Amino acid sequence: MEFSHYSVMLNECIEALNIKPDGIYVDCTAGGGGHSEAILKRLDSGRLISLDQDDEAIETCKNRLSKYGERSIIVKSNFSDLERVLNELEIVHIDGVLMDLGVSSHQLDTPSRGFSYNSDAMLDMRMNPRSPFSAYDVVNTYSESELKKIIYEYGEERFAPIIARKIVEKREESPIKTTLELASIIKSAIPVAAAKKESQHPAKRTFQAIRIEVNHELDVITPAIEGAVSRLNKNGRIAIMTFHSLEDRIVKTKFNDYARGCTCPSDFPVCVCGNKATLKVITKKPIIANTEELNENARSRSAKLRVAEKI
Image 1 (cartoon, one colour):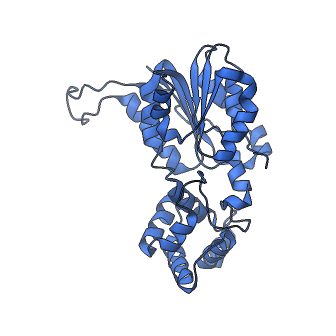
Image 2 (cartoon, rainbow, N blue to C red):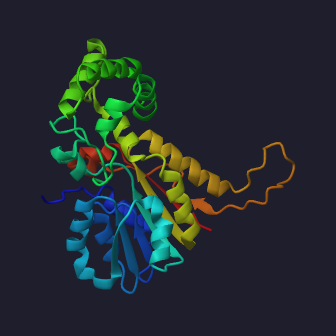
């Protein structure tokens, strides 16, 4: 199957990296290779390391980027392992990092991957298909309180208690195995009046929450940023694109922490911690997709791009 993936805010991401032709860059979430190829086109003696944990993405990138020869290095890895990958490649410092967080269009649009509430498939949602832990395990083994917690916190779903209760009740009859079965249970838990006011599918937030839990998506953001920033050269850029508020909040907070430096209480007359600012935030407000792109790709609507520079 062809790996179809729309490269969200492609021009904005490339512009944000301020690419040097001889620099070393990392695309932490290569996907279909669109952003990776755009970076490679701007390099001459420089190199690009493209990471992804999805086997289909890795194969697609190998085919797409093979013409760039030794300038392109492709590694199967989660971006939280960036420092380990750089150590193995004997690369000490880099000049830019791009992270495109969240699930890819290809994963969403491939029914057998079990991400979509619009197509019937076995419950899966693994970004890394070799992982032993899937959405089936979350739905069928988590306690009602655990389900309620992740649906409320990761999905920001106000009907989380009712949805969690319905899931537990249904699985007591028999295991919940498919995406459409789960979507139907969620839909039945949401009051009709509330569902009619929504423009989106009633299962969207719950599916998002389960996907985040399966892939530990929020847990890996902070260590990934820390690893990337520690390896950036002076004036190197880190650009991170997020697709929901929880991701964006983590990135914004982490960038601001690095830009502030000092962690002393505000009522201290002088700094005693000695921490210095490490980053300069380039985007005071996140960059969002323009109207032309939104007309081409509706999924770009939730994308936010934040950029910072090593000082």
